[in-house]
Length: 58
Image (cartoon, rainbow, N blue to C red; front, side, top):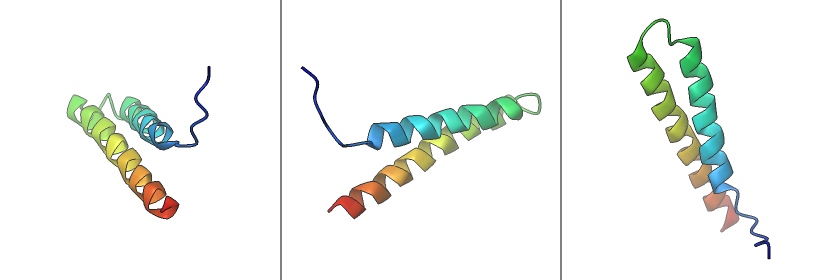
Protein backbone atom coordinates (compact mmCIF):
# COMPACT_ATOMS: atom_id res chain seq x y z
CA UNK A 1 0.00 0.00 0.00
CA UNK A 2 1.19 3.47 0.80
CA UNK A 3 4.61 4.05 2.27
CA UNK A 4 4.17 6.44 5.20
CA UNK A 5 7.55 8.10 5.01
CA UNK A 6 7.93 11.36 6.92
CA UNK A 7 10.97 12.44 4.85
CA UNK A 8 10.13 15.68 3.05
CA UNK A 9 13.50 16.30 1.41
CA UNK A 10 12.13 15.84 -2.09
CA UNK A 11 9.46 18.42 -1.29
CA UNK A 12 12.16 20.94 -0.36
CA UNK A 13 14.13 20.32 -3.56
CA UNK A 14 10.99 20.49 -5.72
CA UNK A 15 9.81 23.64 -3.98
CA UNK A 16 13.15 25.31 -4.53
CA UNK A 17 13.07 24.35 -8.19
CA UNK A 18 9.57 25.78 -8.62
CA UNK A 19 10.67 28.94 -6.85
CA UNK A 20 13.61 29.21 -9.25
CA UNK A 21 11.33 28.75 -12.25
CA UNK A 22 8.99 31.46 -10.96
CA UNK A 23 11.81 33.93 -10.49
CA UNK A 24 13.25 32.87 -13.84
CA UNK A 25 10.01 33.60 -15.64
CA UNK A 26 10.05 37.10 -14.16
CA UNK A 27 13.54 37.78 -15.55
CA UNK A 28 13.14 35.84 -18.79
CA UNK A 29 12.76 39.01 -20.87
CA UNK A 30 16.13 40.21 -19.58
CA UNK A 31 18.26 37.17 -20.37
CA UNK A 32 17.92 33.44 -20.86
CA UNK A 33 21.07 32.91 -18.79
CA UNK A 34 19.40 34.58 -15.80
CA UNK A 35 16.49 32.15 -16.25
CA UNK A 36 18.82 29.15 -16.15
CA UNK A 37 20.77 30.65 -13.26
CA UNK A 38 17.63 31.16 -11.21
CA UNK A 39 16.61 27.54 -11.75
CA UNK A 40 20.05 26.36 -10.63
CA UNK A 41 19.86 28.71 -7.64
CA UNK A 42 16.45 27.31 -6.71
CA UNK A 43 17.78 23.76 -6.82
CA UNK A 44 20.72 24.85 -4.65
CA UNK A 45 18.35 26.47 -2.17
CA UNK A 46 16.30 23.29 -1.99
CA UNK A 47 19.43 21.22 -1.39
CA UNK A 48 20.52 23.53 1.42
CA UNK A 49 17.10 23.28 3.08
CA UNK A 50 17.30 19.49 2.75
CA UNK A 51 20.71 19.46 4.44
CA UNK A 52 19.44 21.64 7.29
CA UNK A 53 16.39 19.41 7.80
CA UNK A 54 18.55 16.28 7.78
CA UNK A 55 20.95 17.69 10.37
CA UNK A 56 18.07 18.63 12.69
CA UNK A 57 16.60 15.15 12.44
CA UNK A 58 19.68 13.44 13.90
